[in-house]
Length: 457
Image 1 (cartoon, rainbow, N blue to C red):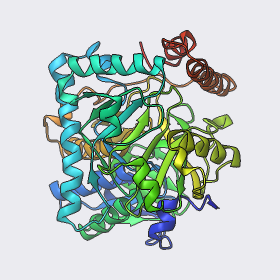
Image 2 (cartoon, one colour):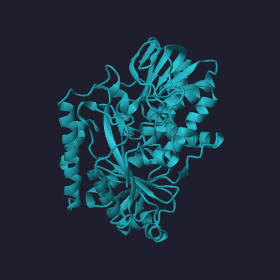
Image 3 (tube, rainbow, N blue to C red):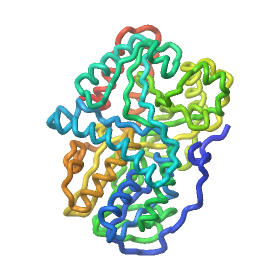
Image 4 (cartoon, rainbow, N blue to C red):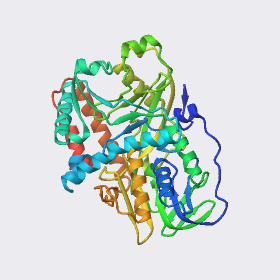
């Protein structure tokens, strides 16, 4: 089994050495820090709106090196932070418009890929969320009620038999399904998008590490770039920037992918509609069926490293690999003898209020986007379009969405941050074990953890 090496996606696609490394001080109109999906989409749309601008993107390793090349491959319309939470602070029509904009962003990514011949192995099959015990069934009913309040999401309730017609997950008691999600190959989307951005005249300075972001300037290990507009698109690596240690927590997420499954295994599982797949556990897992007949499944291993440290090359603990494989086999017992081909990990950005954000301070020329809490593949596209509008000075429907310019308080200092995060994930894990033993309702431990974490208010 292969481990680390950034991710299976990059090992499968192949990657080149960093190119166009910054060579000394420079001046530009716009500097985007981070060549993940957020930074690339921002450059893509801004170059379309303002082709006269000199736009530079700066990336510490190579385009798509971070979460954009390591994620589960879900092009999902999920709104980070939840619609109900936004509805407590914003008018309901604006929150509904936010969901519709996310739905539209799924189609936008698919459309851009088609127009520019980016073969990201996209298949839109929706998302299937399965409940495998009584407490999870309760949460499935709660989610169905959420879907009734917010028809924009498109939630459908499924019986166990109806769920099995899509994917046969062992022990499924009921499920819900959402239409606005597609499976993708993350690295192929990132690489294709980087190619198109370069074709639009944007320079991507790879192999260049940013240390400080300030109004009008970006300080790197290879020189200082001055610009009127500076955009921070660093997601889980934000903590590495001067002064940003407590802005967003770099939460770890891990994945494994199997060897290609034999035909008899697929016959036992089904999964012909290419749904993305998730369960209703508190420490949930998520999966996709890849184009070459594998299953990629992810979840939390070691959720957080002391001092907001970030990994470099996707290293993964063998215990996490074993844990994810146990979950996979519990879902699909027919895979007991199918080997794991690759395991890796990465970091995602988590604000203290668990809500993604996009914003631009015109007076200082500073913009930012991220904090997607693991649901950023689609959100990054909407954020990139929004940042392009804001930098170009255009007021659009996107620039007035509820996530624009919303602020979160900073995370607690260490050691409170480490103790709190690890304590909460242990609580969620204990709640899952209690529920698996037959609890009929969501564990009170999980309810308290939700309150303490800020995931619900």
